[in-house]
Length: 218
Picture 1 (cartoon, rainbow, N blue to C red):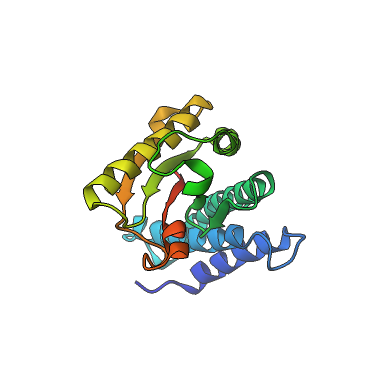
Picture 2 (cartoon, rainbow, N blue to C red):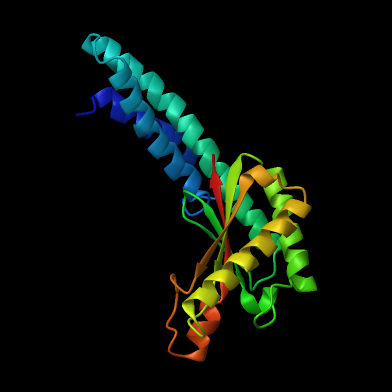
């Protein structure tokens, strides 16, 4: 389906408006701006399709309205991701990873911070960090949280899968204890199946032993 000139103008105008509200310049709140553009284009497409049986003028009007509404929704989601990511980076330890890909936030905690070898008992330090994450989740309640446990490939695959699941559940339990609604959280064990580094050396295996908290807007 070809977008009309009005549709593209609406999307561009929405993005320009968000950028104009950003005092920090083009390198800050990029996800907010991206969300506005994606929302504008998606809203325009929905608006045009919804009025597909009307005249060209009516379709253009529907696309324009859809673009404006979509841009607002997309910008709001992107802005929340930007704000939450910045807050988490500021309040969590420097060895806790926080990344924002525009669709969700990923908080990565290493096994060395969380657990002793072959243990599912969380350390005091890690409980403090998870309390910070729980507070953030409570400030931004309109999200779903997946807690993913990962291991290296030392030991049997079955053992590693079970260990990763129990560790993910332990982290999820602390978040729930911090006031996060259980209905928002799902714990998943990935075992050794999703390494982010080579398991052929100690540094790589250390990186692979981790828990990821993936925060996705609803």
